[in-house]
Length: 434
Image (cartoon, rainbow, N blue to C red; front, side, top):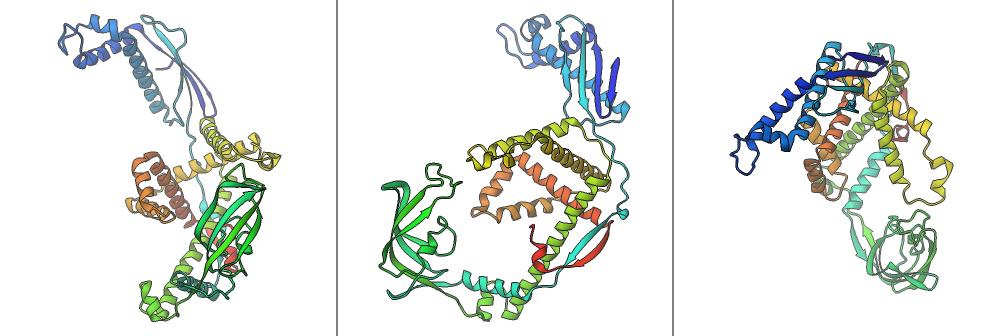
């Protein structure tokens, strides 16, 4: 057991002593295990004398022995104190030599004890919105657009927003053509925003056979640094223009999306939108409850966890600003240690509150929860299989996803205990921060 301890809030500093005899005995046990598998000339495995093993493996065996005995002391200590570590201890064994007693020190932070939280004292706002009929019509129109056919137009037809222009183009900065700025028979949906701002607008109004220049300016944060912020000229030729012809909204169209009739399709869309309204309102209540918990729950946070959170935030900041222009080097984008520390402390505090409360109240992440979350993530990408493979091979990422689901479920469980007051809002207010 430790002979000295110094405790300040959640930070512990302890000192222990391992006798030379105990160390030698533990090292010999480890050497004996080495000897069962070790291969040395002149000896059969399992029959190598301890004295011979010591000559080759003594240093590594002692290292393992010290770790084993320090961990034994630490585990007995935290069990007797009924505390939990917030991270790996920092060990100091300076000055120790083989054959002598080992005096060592350990420094570590512990997890705080969550105080009782009376959720019934908290009130959050539940925003309620009536279903906007325009949203239903917009969804129906999108279904028609997704099933439209692009029909080639005659030479008198002028390109309009939403049309497909089949074009050749070649880009120049000054009089010099730049790499990657040329294509033949490229199909461009006008108004899609696929090209540089202003490019597609200058195609609108032109006809098949037209040859003309398009003048644009590359964005200052363009991915190709040699083009960022520069004026460019594109020589363009239109080969053909295709206009999207939308199918009629009828029962046949409804059947293509798995519904029996237009009426059934409308009901299906209404139900989906209502679910989205409900989830958006729930999301806002979660955020409001997080603010309340951060403000009302008094909880010290371990410096170890805050330092880890800060380190991750700093790494993310540095990655995001690794290749930035003068704009993102301004004071608004500089690393603010004081501000970031406050945010890190908040994140750690809320993480501990949700973890502790969720565990105490038997919140669980089921296999179905995890599968649904992976499927939802995969649906956002053009190649879902890559997402499945990523999570199959990356257990850390899967653990992070599990943690996010756990926190969301803990918040939802908490919301079942708080008071709510309804507020009537327009539908767009539910999604303004989504």
